[in-house]
Length: 365
Image (cartoon, rainbow, N blue to C red; front, side):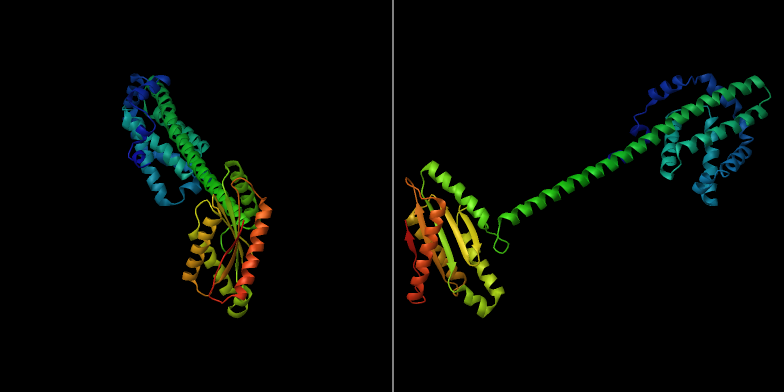
């Protein structure tokens, strides 16, 4: 966009000297026409003030045009511009500089909100006034006729360039609106996709810990169980429960209880591998599925996890039930989960019977 603003309107419109001459030929504007206008120049310029006065007298009679002009300072600038334009019309030089000014007229008219119908109406008024001025000031009727005919061709020539930039400006606005709409659509799509991911996350994950919820865990367990059977690899299921969690809530408050659940979930994540499946089933009950892990590996994982948990919060004690299956014979996923749950309860009962600082893990296979 920066490079475009450094170009002239001619360059932006891809108009060169060849195109200018081609358009003159298209409208039948010849060197003799340029000469006819040059010969009429001194006669027309002698009437220049009267021509401009009459032109704007008629223009301000149109309410919409009067509103666009607005004030005396704008009128003053417009009168100066109109004098310069009429001077250019009879200059006899219609080159790239002349055309660039015509292109700018189209751009300015578009920017200030002059609709094409008003531009064409004004051009018709100017043409009529100039015809009268030419016919009144030139003593030779034939010369006046040639000058009027040449003027008409030049006005058509000018109008084509004016409308080139007018239309180009409109197309640019459409492109800008289109690009804005596309950006908005892309942003909206991104937001919808992000919201969809968030909803998917919420539908599959526990809001407090970020671990899988019960439904998503059941799906993941069945999927991992089927993979273990296909590949003949062992799989371990851990059922984890916080000891005396109700007492934590009752004595320290639910906020502290939530913090304890968050700590357990964080430590469980840190102790796990990327492909391990972790879930909070509800309350203070957690599950972990360790693909490719046998009973020995599961018990080693439990020892690391308990040690890390004690390092984070010594007030947290857990009971863990472990159940392993495979690699050749497999229990069903629901059976694995049930056995791990039962083993966890056996472990919890043993904790209550043992000294408070003694932690052990039972394994059922």
